Each structure stands twice: as C-alpha cells, then as structure tokens.
Length: 140
Image (cartoon, rainbow, N blue to C red; front, side, top):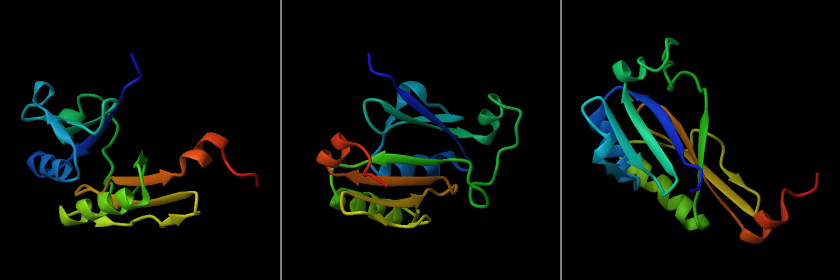
C-alpha cells in the first residue's frame, strides 16, 4: 500500500470550507465526515481533513494561528501541465480564494502558482517537465 498523507487544517466555517474544496476538485468522503470534521479527497493518496477549531484543539494544546497573518506551512500539490496549474488557481479564485499569495515561479522546466483558501492556508500548485523531474534538480 502506498503511503498516504492526511493534512489537518483548522477552519472557521466548516460548510464554507467544504464548498471551497469541492470547487477546487476535492471529493468529500462522508464516511470520515461529521459536523466537526470533513475528509476531502484530493487524490488516491492525499486527503485534507478540515477540522473545526473545537475539533482541532482535541489534537493539540498549541494555539491555532491565524493563517491570514502567519504561515506555518506551504502545501504543494502537482498538476499534469502548466495549463492545469492555471486552471486550479482559477477554480480557487472563482470559489473565493486568493490567487498568487506567493510569487509565481516559471523556470521553463518547472512552473508554479499558488492560492489561499478562505482560512488563509496557502496551497502551491506546480508542474514539472517529466524529463526534468527524472533528471533531478539542475546544477547550481
């Protein structure tokens, strides 16, 4: 079985966050969702757990930062083409997200943009030429 990743995100408005993630292409797994949490499936191996602040506090005693004011992580997912990167950012923007809170990256062999969800969590979306990916990073 491949390794799976579950990204746990605190959200202020669970129904609004569910709607946003559906709009950018995630599917909700109702088997792992209730009034305090929603499991959003991005791929066969990537899941985003949207947790109300009350639910999130059950996992940590640390303060929940305001993701609009500070950034603890930058989440990055790949797409199959440059056009798909632009399309993902367009979907996020149309659903109420903010486009390009981080600098656009265009290195020819690699292209990346980003968006913020309604809670301020930053998602980077990138494409890399398969031949460049197989060859590893370019020499400095």
